[in-house]
Length: 207
Image (cartoon, rainbow, N blue to C red; front, side, top):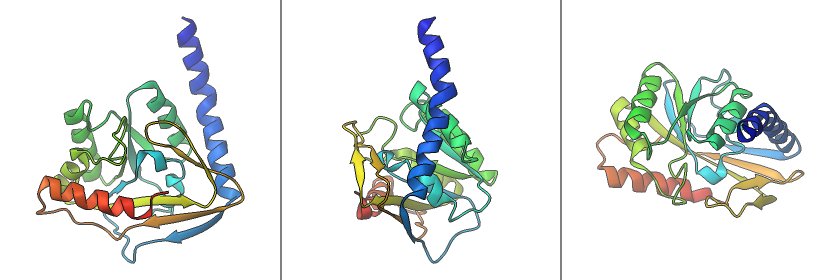
């Protein structure tokens, strides 16, 4: 009972505080955006490392003035906190991962892409290993013909947690440098080649 009460309180408070923190950090930093020349109008798979998740909603707004996206989030309690935080940014979520309940999650993600929603995914989430790329991102892109755009956010000042993903939290009063790749086409590539390509692009601007 006590655990349920604590979780309910956390769900009521933590996402709101998380949203305030994200807005504070964004507003108190200078911003530099490196955007692709081509921004597809059709649904896209946006990929970013798990440890680089915090500021990515703001990069997404550079692509879509009216957000229409579902982000793949762990179906654990931490995922529920992130999911509720994402709602403050008008982003939907799909609970699960491409490692756990993979088939169900992939079906939902593919359906969302076909319905016109972008998909946000951390290819090394929800539990790592860090900087690994799961099969799921390749499967959903190739099944729908969606292009992949990889995201990075490089703060000049930041804290880095001791978690498996070395989660990055920007400090205020620095600069946030956002990077988004040109759209990547995975059609016709073998699974391992496609995963390697995504990993190489994601590693170009890591903290």
